[in-house]
Every structure is written in C-alpha cells, then in structure tokens.
Image (cartoon, rainbow over all chains, first blue to last red; front, side, top):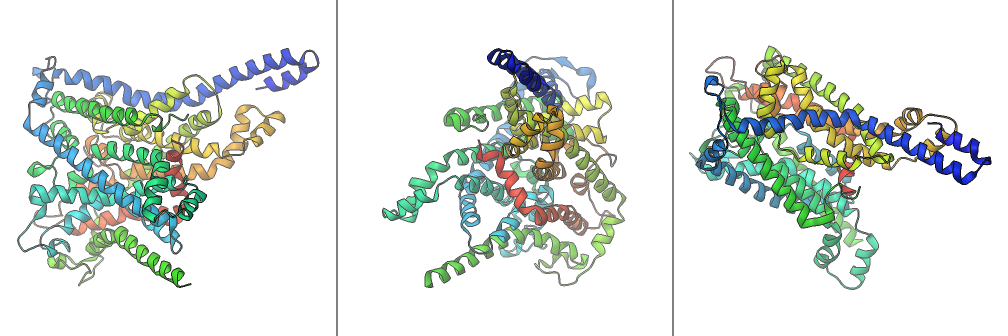
Length: 312
Length: 276
C-alpha cells in the first residue's frame, strides 16, 4: 500500500529505523494480499476434492448399494476384503499396470525422437510443431472411435490388413495392444514437448566441445544430453505415468472393459454407475488413490529434488 | 554443400513421417464421416461415395446440438473462472512472499496428479444430495478444480518472465499493489493468459469421465458423452456415420486453436515443466 511512501516521508527522521518499519508494514501488506489472491483458488480446490475424498473413505466403510438402500450399514473394512480378494479387481489392476508401463516406455522412446525432430529441424519446424499438437488436442473419445472403426472387421482400413476373420478388439491380447496404440498416439506429443523443453536446457557449447573431443552422436546423447535432461525426463515420466494409470476414455470406447481389458478406473466406474454400488465403487476409488500416491512417492523419493515444484 | 542437401532431405523424410503419424488417424475418421452409409464396410481409406448426409444427420439430432451447446457453455464458464482465480493465485505465487505458498503449490500439484475416478463416486453422491447432479454447475465445479493447477503452474511460469520493474515504477507513482497488478501487469500477462485459457479449455472440452458420470440427460451432457450414447436413429441403423461426423465436429475447434496458437501452446505446455 503506501508503506513505501510513508517510509520515504520518514526517511529524514531516521533512515534505518523508518526503513525497517516500512519493510515490515510492506511485508504484512504483501502477506495479506498473497493470501487474499490465493484464497478463491485454494478454497475451490480444497472444497471440491477435500470433502469428497473424506466422504469416499467413509463410503468405502459402508455397505451401500443404491439398489438396496435399506441394507446400508457400517461394515468396517469388509469392502476392502471383498475388492482385494476379487479376481476382477486384480485383473484390472495388472492390466492397468501393463498398459501404463508399456505405453509410457514406448512414449519415452518415441517422444525423445520426436523431441529431437522438433528441436533440431532445419526445415519445416513450424509444420511439425503444429501437427504434433493435433493428437494432443483432439478429444480422446473422438480419436478412440477412429481407432475402434479402423480395427473393426469390414469397416476398418487397419483391420483389412489382418488375416480374414480376425476381430482384434474382441480378443484380449490384441485389444490391449490397440488400447496401448491409441494411448501412445495421443500422448506421445505431450511427452515430446516436455522433453523438448529439457533439450533446450542442454548448452550447445558443451555438445560442440564433446564433438571436438571426438564423441560420437550416441556418446554425446548418452553422456551429455541425457544427464542434463534428467529433471525434464523425470517430470515427463511422473506426469505421464500417473496419467496413464487413470486411463479410462480409450478403454471405454474401444472395449468397455470386455474380455478382461478393463482398467481400475473402468472397474470403479462400472461398479458405481452401472452397479450403483457406492460402497464397492468408493473402495476401488480409495485404492486407486492410494496406488497413485505410492507411485508419486516412489518417483519423488527416487528422484529427490527433481520433483516438480520443489524449486519453488 | 553435399552434407547440407543430405540433411535437408533427411528432415523432409522426418517431417513426412511426423505428419503421417499425427494426421492419418484424424484423416481416417474424417474420411469415414464423408462416406455414404452403403460404403461403410468397404474398408477403403478414401471414401468411394461421398456424402454430407452424416453431418446433416447430427445437426438435426437435438441431443448432439444440445451436447455442443453444453460443451461450449460449460467449457467457457469453467475456463473463465479458472483463469480469473488462477491468475490471482499465480501472481501471488510468482511475486509475493506469504505463508502457505508452498502448501498451495503442493495442493495444486496433488490435484494435477489426482485420479479423477476417485472423485467420481463421492461427487456422484454429493451432487445428487445438493441438487447439482446433471446440471452445468455440477460439471463446472470439478472442471475448475482440475483446470486450476494447470493455470496456476503455467501462469506463474509466464509471470516470472514479466519485467517487474514496471510494477515497482507504478507503485512509486502511487499505485496500490492492486492497481499495479491490474493496470500494469495484467496487460503484459495477457499473452500468457490467452495460452493458459486455451489449455484449460482443451482440458474441459476433452473431459469424458465426469461428463458421463455426473449427468443423466441432455440437460448437462457434453458432446463427447453424447457421442458415446449414439445408437443410430433406428435399431437397425449403424451409428458409424453419425459418430464419425460428430467426432470431426468436436475436433475442429481444437484444430483451429492449434493452427492459430501453435507457438503459444508449445510455450504454455512446457513452461510449467522446465522450471521443475
């Protein structure tokens, strides 16, 4: 506010004392402003996520099926026992993990190539940077229908490449492969953009020096570029791993979880919206949250200060 | 010279590969949307018999038109609120020292990584109790919540790049911190805000899980969710044409954003991460 002004006014009386006081006043005003400016965002985020999380833990401790509301009762941890001993849940869990690991691994390699292409391109840089944003921006559901029809026997151009009579989306293995393909196609550009930002951090002189010293392209990549890019790679991996773990849209459209291709999000959705079983649905929600937290903690512990936000 | 020419042709090949990668799946759905229903099953990449009938069909489908209106309305309102609140918070994060700053950053980071499905079951129940289920507000609230971390991160990265001496100069001239913020900084920050708004809008436009879980009719169901309910106008009619035409329609706004704001979007997507 006018802390600075009053500080200037009293400067003649005692420079050091007035300055000290003005600073404190200024600081107090700054703190107040900071809190006020953050309040709306903080309140919305906490209200929309905080209470629902607590509520879903409470729901997970109850037998609560909207089809039989009169049976509602507190049953402790037995929902957890039910879910954790269910083959369907574990199948969904391993499928989700498989999709996450495979798609993030492929995305890292493809994304790195794409990042190099975008960063180093002499010709048509604007063009590639523009087109890669299309998979990123396209509505996942729209793209998923594209993939679905592409692999539908008779209709699809890709299905036509397969031996006659095969319907890949109705078989477990091929269906999971197609889900991974759809996921990789859509999210590699995002990975590539994050990695490209990391590439920009690598100083040109260092690469030139290495090249003068006789380092090959591969050596320059593994010995200079990769170590310097580590923070960017870890951030990209963390974001994409957690994002892949919550995969829903692609599976919903491609198989809707049939033939054992459902992810944990699909299972929770089916229990909740299809089955109207709030207790079991919430238990799965809590378990998914816990898993995501574990993945995040592993990343952050494993990579220390490279965690996003730690710099601030 | 020779090496130069070789690398130029190398880049041309790389460009072609990247363009094919990005465009083929999109062109395929576009092609399908122009196919005459009698030729859906010919498996050809290029339509053999062109028609606009699929588009005419979806635009006379009241559910889809309503879904588009919902998508646009909900997306714009959520984006607007997220940008206003996000700008305020990002300014504070980038510029001010105050208690709880790290907590705010931590909370937004947690929300950015939060599995949305974990919110679906409690929100389904809470919104039904509050009468928010199947309303615009019922979708706008979670959308703002998930767009906020994105806006706070992206904008605070942009805000760090702004020449803040100007703000100091304005304060010297007697502007209050709020005036300095609103009249000096906001105009400078406008490009970053446009970028962030586009990213936030893309997020809302893209959402599917909340849209199918927290709605039960076309009162609030957004376009992606509406598409997944297409069954064809009769039981025997194949919805392939309508679904592909609708998929193309909801893709168009994104393509327009990308074409006009490519540079900005790239800057926005990467700004939050580099600093990390």
